[in-house]
Image 1 (tube, helix red, strand yellow):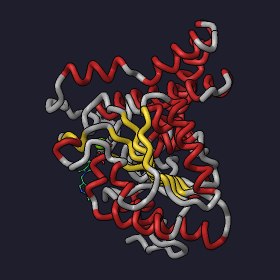
Image 2: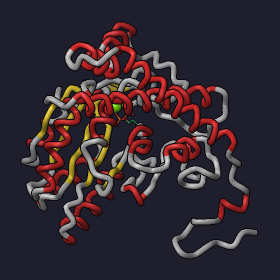
Image 3: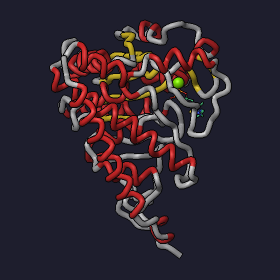
Image 4: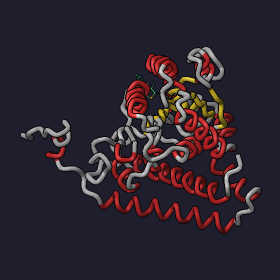
Length: 326
Ligand SMILES: Cc1ncc(C[n+]2csc(CCOP(=O)(O)OP(=O)(O)O)c2C)c(N)n1
Ligand SMILES: [Mg+2]
């Protein structure tokens, strides 16, 4: 605990940026301008920002399906992250990945795929590679509470613990997997209890407190870099919206949604900056305007970008070998 004012301001800026980014893509999805599913992280910004800022660019990041913020802050050209979600030719993956498959290995963003839990297996690969090469790179794997029920979760923890792999598991517990509450899906109240079975540390974090997330991930990363093995962090939080953009989420009590909205991670950080760090209201407003401007510029780039050409569909299918188009 005890980040400098400058460091906390920087985390606040990132959270505002992620919130505005999500609100913007949500608006355009509802206009029908974004193909495919869109899983938004509004309400969970502290988990993404606190985690990514505790990692180095050289570290391997495996974002899950609700991780636009990780992709946005990993070090890639940010406007190309938005363009990817819109399926534009200028997107990070030429518009072929979309919201769920944004990858950029140049900055250690190893991408996601539609199979929950699969990144828990592939993440073992980058961790083994780093261990063999002695590169000190850490692998951070982001998963949701629902993914704890997958076989890969247990296979991954078992091998990572046995081989002391440099992995930080960032389990974002937003209490629901689609419409199923965690209590109906798992036999334990706190999912970190699962870590005990594999003899690895499991830590519960307030996932709406960006400073707490940053501190916990920093400690787990240091442990992994020192060769002490994996850690499972459970970040308790909540997604304000439904499972995907457009899901009315009628399965959740309104009082529950309200309770969590009152714990808004941005609001909490803002209050800490104002009250504990004595930052002026005007300074925060200027920061918020700057984030808006950054989003406006990203959107202008995205909307002015062309769609991919039909012939692009057969490019980059295999590494080093193009498929002839018909
Ligand atoms: C193997 C597999 N089973 C089911 C699905 C369908 N599915 C997509 S997201 C999701 C829920 C994931 O919940 P959680 O891990 O809690 O993440 P959250 O959506 O809450 O962020 C499910 C069941 C899938 N993609 N892969
Ligand atoms: Mg969940």
